Image (tube, rainbow, N blue to C red):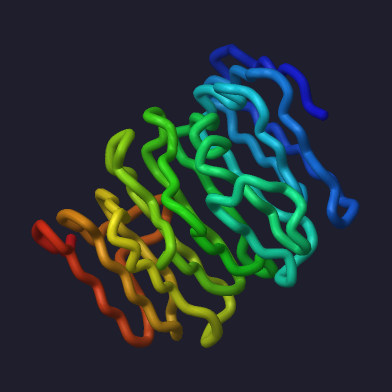
Length: 219
């Protein structure tokens, strides 16, 4: 269990908390203020139990510890499915950071949206990182709290894919690094291809981008 973290000052600090035992549960039990800090939580299971669990961090990374066989389910409301880090829409909404990163390259498992996810108002960028695929057909990233910029990084060259076609997915700027993988992305409104969190433009083997109700702009 993790209680209050308070590093509220003018300095940028790195906060790194990892549970190395397979299947360990990290529970956040108190609201934390981390101003301009960069925070990383690594655990195979997480319970983000309180409102404003992380407030005002510069960046926040959530990742698993157990490699590619341990996947990430965005939208699940339980925490006990085998080999899954499960984060509900409510839990994601309790995290505020300019850049919210979920997953990791090199050995991170597939990331799947099982329902729509709405990050907090204070989140500007969402970055999904995986050694597998990103699947958003039963859910996606919504703009209920303002459209976010989305980056996706696939690190397993030639394996995996990006398939985000949920009708509620609505982002501002999109950037995808999937050099030899298939990329399919549908946005509910207009869409700009640009730079997000050090990912520039969209790369892929076969790329299909569509904007349902607006313009598609490539910067």
